[in-house]
Amino acid sequence: MLWKKEDPKKKEKPLPLPGEYLSSVCEVKTVKNELVATGTITEITPEYIQIADRGNTMVGLRFGSVVKVNIFNSRLGYRVLEGKVYLSTQQFLRLVELNILLDREQRGAFRVRTSIRGKLFWPGKPAAAEPGAASPAEAAISGTGLSVTVEDLSVGGALLRGEERIFGGGDQLVLQFMPVNLMLQLNGVIRRVESQEDGTVRYGFEFQDIPDAQQDALCAYLFQRQREQINQRRR
Image (tube, rainbow, N blue to C red; front, side):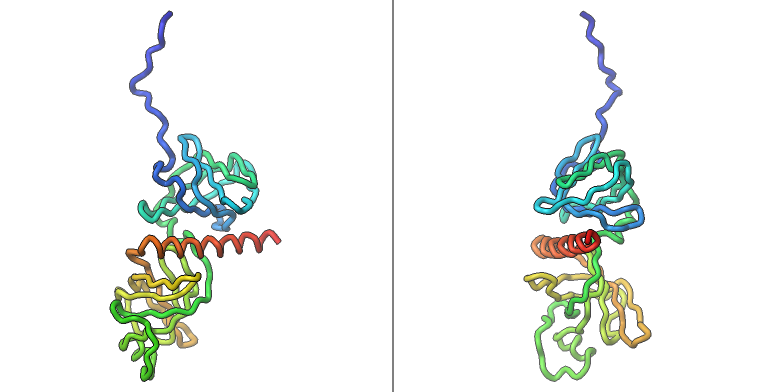
């Protein structure tokens, strides 16, 4: 019997995503950025990835539909993939023909609209109640913090609205707020400042060096809000 010699140049098909991303959280969106599902990566093979949302029912998607998958891992960072729906059940979603998208696609990942009160202050000056601060500026300088509303929130940062232009681009600050039953204090930097017609100021705040426990709590909140959005569209 003659054995067929394997071609040494023939290599195994690479994984569409490093295996370390298994169990990472992800969100699935249409090409028009409509959120359709959230979950975790449960399988990674050379041919497909599989997503499931344990304890929740997945939304059925049409065979062959093109979707984007925003994947986040606190250690490895973001990955954004585009793929086609191969199997869609109430338990899982299987995607094939996966391609890596550009980094700029990450900006809209894991983002929800909110209305959470918080404080923005300099590092080392806790946002504690302190009488005698006559203005937002004095409050920010003294350590009580500038009161802000978190209007838009993601794992990468937040859009904040405050009463005055106290801080500027590049300022290293701390944002304290409570989206869940846990007070979060997240370090970050002001990336942009925009004055509004009503006299308020919007701050674009990018998170930096978030501890794993706080990042997990933030992800849990974002996923809960996203599930609520999906369920509302089903009604």
